[in-house]
Length: 629
Ligand SMILES: C[S@@+](CC[C@H](N)C(=O)[O-])C[C@H]1O[C@@H](n2cnc3c(N)ncnc32)[C@H](O)[C@@H]1O
Image 1 (cartoon, protein in one colour):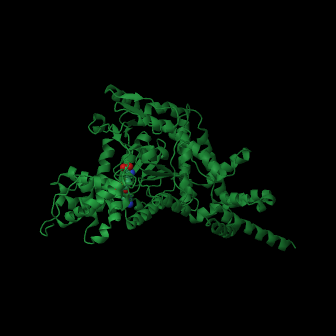
Image 2 (cartoon, protein in one colour; image 1 turned 120 degrees about the horizontal axis):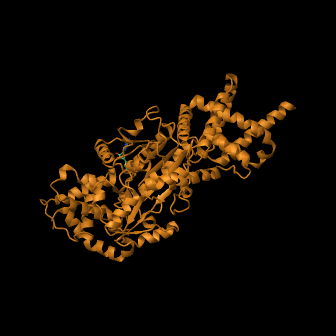
Image 3 (cartoon, helix red, strand yellow; image 1 turned 180 degrees about the vertical axis):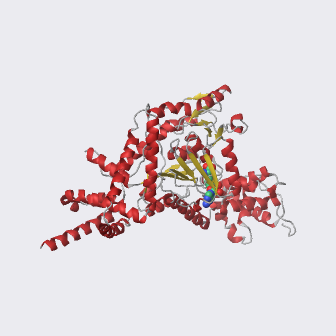
């Protein structure tokens, strides 16, 4: 029997509060636990209790549902009830107190246990044991020195399999506690068996190695900024990816690392300094307040915004309420649109979350890319990973989702993680690719195929860059091969769509050539008049080209930069077209036409677009035959 005067033990109350906070507001369990107010508590006890509750949250939900406890006991706080139940069923297996909530839970004990034993298989919370991933901070240590250091301690280095990713996955499951190997994709990352304890390791304490999950390292791996380029980390603290970016770029160029939260900003600064990430410039600011003109030199953007964290091992995803999810997703979309629109020279964005909810992932990507008026497109992650990856997004919010990548605990042995690579579409690519197409009879019209070529270039660079300095320099000299991968623009896609429509196809070859020119000029006018963004891109690209030229001259001994040359051609063509921009009267006509085109392009579905184009062309034909008659 409970006694009114007996209160619930404090640590259960505190655990319930923290559990609620983590579940409804997000934030890290560890951060909440290390609050000053809790310094008199045994943090490890609280941690274990909350951890256990989170781990079994889905099971407790089912048990509660079956017993209808929350309906029957309307005054029982559900968060506290879950903490107490976790303690009773999965923790100490007892509740000490005589308080009302404890006694209520105890009165359901038999019912809970009966359900649990009858549904053992359903309730088994599968805990996947992830390997211990270690990123070598190549700012301070080379991968070969790291290998030697671990070997000196008695670890055995198992050579990375030369087979498939699936072979590698089998291999890492057999690692003994004395083994380590190199990650299949991120060559500056080592993989140890799950229980390897490295928190006290000298290399860890001196920041020469960083304990970071492999999935999160893929974000930088796929953003692949060149050394000497300019990258922006929009949500930077604590700085895992910022410092990885610096190392990836061999501390050459610049990484802007922006963080809004003051305390986390301090952590970021500290980490940046300790890791020797010299090319990082930390900025204490709200990323959404960075305006055009503030950081116009940014070429690569990493966007890793706050999310539900539903992919983390300590997942509370069953409790993420819909209001919080809605808030987060709208913020994530806002961030992505901001990234797409506020940095004129940005050519690639990697968007990542440690969430497994499509609302925070595929839907954000789909909405933002659709909204970008085809200025941005999603690169196919499967191609970027050279076919060596197994989990991708769903098409539930559109086909773009299928081009995104998921990392999954049960098959990739990482945390649950989502990643999308976005590439800016620009007319320069269109012109260039058109020139190439004209030269190459085998070349394809389709966006997918040119995109795939683009992906190949990116993945080639990714492979080149992801090695330690001394190993990569040789390779790099051979192939500094990344070029701006810019894709066909809206109008070209419109043409493709139109050309797919067989009724339009036959008559218009000559006319199309002329039209292509007019349209490209139109596009320029449109951008000149409406989109200062793209003018900036051009200016930016010019600068980029000048830089590249300088670099080229400087490195005359190096192998030919054929693709940098291509980039110059692209810009040359662009400049020429801009200079050609027609006289004002023509401009007006063009503007009208451009508005028509814009209306057409607002239709997202290519089929619809092709129909509109077809109708318009038909209308035009009818009109001209009317005139002729
Ligand atoms: C998921 S964490 C980033 C983790 C980080 N990328 C890493 O790898 O270490 C998200 C971070 O974004 C920060 N943040 C949230 N909103 C922001 C904003 N508007 N501007 C800048 N930073 C923001 C949060 O404070 C948090 O530190």
